Length: 408
Ligand code: FE2
View 1 (cartoon, rainbow, N blue to C red):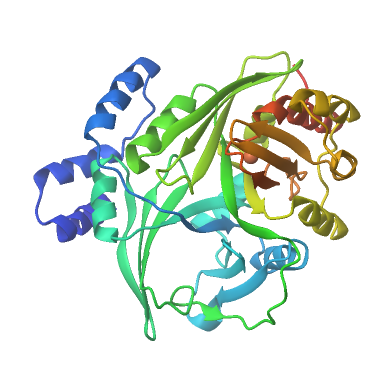
View 2: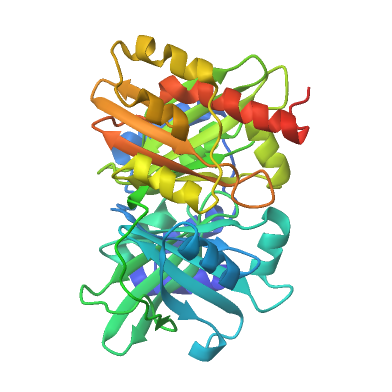
């Protein structure tokens, strides 16, 4: 693989001994100590060239049964199935469905081979996110910067053609087993990617009111928060916009928010901290067998309609204690006319210097107590509901208690 990557890099940049060394080094990317990080981050702020990603192109899940997962997203969450790849389209080792909803595109992939990397991923982590793909303007330039930033290329730029359509895709290793594909598209694209065939389905008005991906949240092991922060700063130029230390009666955790330059890509990263009991982050890490994406937040243009739609299809939301709503108007400093509706739908409300936001959290959407969804509606607020975090975590702890996982 290293040899192949050397060849790729040479073809992009021409022969370059320094680059080859970078590629070899990048295979040993390892967490750094915090004091070292502080020095590195200051230096890189002045000198670094990072991949300038503009927005998320798609998010890919590896799942046990792509067909059933597609049906869940279509019939329960209100997405549209738009493309398919599998044996019928010349793909021999996997089946993938592309599903969309307004500005959200997801791929659900399962393996046709029992011991493939896809099968191994699902065996270890369950159904979960593997790839957060970004749109880039110039893929060769992006890959060059990735290599310079210590990121490890795992798929060289590949031109994919389907009739008149063309896309160029490369993939780099993210932090750990997650990967990031970089996709450069021809503006006139008609199909998702080559080897996918369109799925014709009637265009129905969207009932879920989901309009975009708002953010993704990662859980990482204790002590690893800074090295994740460092990776995304180093490779993609994400900057830290917010940090939080959260403690409840039972558990504690540290969290940071990272954003790209235009603010369209937002990641929150959380690690467990010392507390009286096992935190929800530790529960995630235990059942996910390591770090991973804990939740995906969809932006809604009408959160009450979204929550009602999902509830009517059987999605369960976290139950927020009545005490939260008893204190809400006092905390926000004014009356909230919709407070009864919010309480009925378990919707949390917060405000920051720029406005309000409303958010609701599903229970895990698979058997393991790991991955779940967040629905968020923003009325000017750019934060993540820090005023709600304690109430939210206490609600999760009550679920943990029911599962027997709130233990010391
Ligand atoms: Fe979130």
